[in-house]
Image (tube, rainbow, N blue to C red):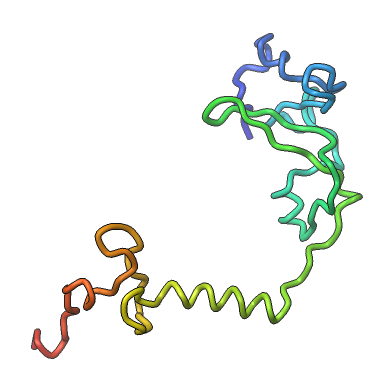
Length: 145
């Protein structure tokens, strides 16, 4: 995994590295992509996505550090303590039903009450209308024979 800041001998890179947090609003700041070397985040810290991959959530804790990286300018990812994270809450049957209902609603025409086998275009000129309501009849396989 390469460092997005480039050459680690460049002194500008180490302007970001701030393990005490005195230059970045009190948050210790590490550099992305140099795990295990000076400048990398210490073990026991993870981003929200890393916690999610472990089946954990941040559990209302505030970030204890951050990692700086370059992607469309300078960006940051907050780090949380893994030992304070809690397990993710499981999906209840009511939540699953709600998600399925929302997914099914995308397959409905906004003009007629039909359920479709495709998702109608939600932008101009269709605005959620099916092909029949738009005046574009679907091709019948019997007509092509």
